[in-house]
Image (cartoon, rainbow over all chains, first blue to last red; front, side, top):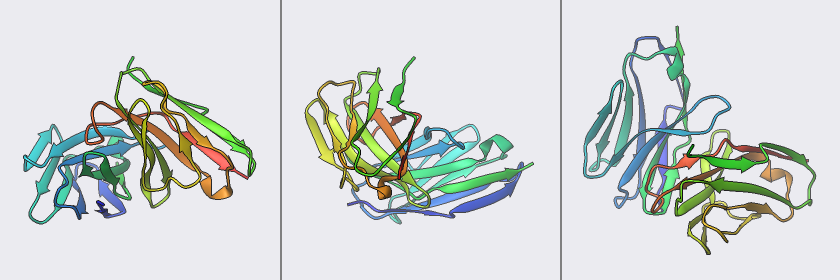
Length: 110
Length: 113
């Protein structure tokens, strides 16, 4: 089955800086890579996703890149704001074999 | 409003006392899933269901049961809860298979004493 590893586990940045979270996966058949944001005490919510036929996807300040050869994908947040502070989870897999990374706690300092 | 509803939100109970956490979605999704969230471990899948009467084990199914008698409901049953099942539980649903955006419920925090 799939195995997803996520780094770093914690990340602290100054407001306005960029933040990058990286994930690797093990199964070359994996074809779907969503990212979820979980604010304190709340449910995870999808912020962006990418499929294996695309190398990069952008939505305002958020972008995700996928390198199928190296089996890694990354979340990039530019111009960070205090409301970006949350735990971010990467997910990778195919059909019903989806795996969550362990999460990255992002803190944006004003 | 499209939503996934879990009940109860919080529960403190004792070892061995059977409990059920309900999950209901109003989006006509085929796929439903249960996860548990523990610090440092992310979300781990307990069970999932691809449609009515179709359920399958996830990564950590031991000590749990599920049923899918109706498309909208997917209850999680702990027949004989133990302290190692103390956790935060999330139900989720999506259309199609598991490789689609999932909608999560608000979570159920279970404490087994």
